[in-house]
Amino acid sequence: MKLLITRPLPDQVVAAAKARFDVSLRESTLPLTPEELRASLRDFDLILPTLGDRYQADVFADVPQPRARMLANFGVGYNHIDVAAARAAGLLVSNTPGAVTDATADIAMTLILMTARRAGEGERMVRAGLWEGWHPTQMLGLHVSGKRIGIIGMGRIGKAIARRAQAGFGMEVVFHNRSTVADVGVPARQVSLAEAMAADVVVIAVPGGKETHHLINAETLGHMRASAILVNISRGDVIDEAALAAALIGGKIAGAGLDVYEHEPKINPALLPLENVTLLPHLGTAALEVRVGMGMMALANLIAFADGAALPNPV
Image (tube, rainbow, N blue to C red; front, top):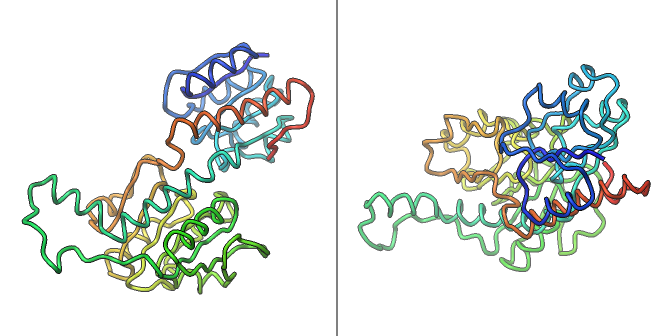
């Protein structure tokens, strides 16, 4: 079976794929172009896409009888794939949950600490030669230990963040989730969105998609404290970045830490000059062993399909 891998992946993953399939490995690190998207459905049996490869309804409409039978997404988030349109065209879709959980939770904690303690701002000061030495009132930030964290979305990643916050920093955990979560794994209270947004630290960990588009907007940001920080490790378009920039500039919240962006890789220009924002280049799963694990999980789904077995991780 012919397999298209849409981006360079770790060598171990590529070697394992080549051992089983006739692999075409695309060398570009950019998302598939509209032409490439359509060609992939016509020319390959299997496709291993990732973030930014926008298999939307119009793509499937333009290829009414695709050769492709499966999209094995590299990543847990799959809002770039119109799953209903894929199924209607006869394709199965899988993803890689579990493999990304701890790494993404670690980046959430990184952003919390960097933003609360003004680490990015401090490093820029040192590199610019502007630091004049320690003094008692220099760059005072938010002391995270013992504070309340509000987690929006209590899935695998939300629970991993809760464990780190509670066990590592003694934080009080409150969370908002669309469905009831019986056991978070640590002491935690399920509350309304407004109450979760009123915590000292707010972390967004919901899936992307139409249901969560601009979930964090001017209204929901209005529930936050002026001393609070907001962290997003979910999908960029969960936040209305214009509203976030306005809240930061107006002093309605103290800071924000972002690993994902509404129009990634473009950043809202209003955010770029702000010292109270930590901006990372989508590092959530950027560790070799994690990316290998994601690739092997995607490959396991492809092999299961080829063998006529049930997919381990169907969407």
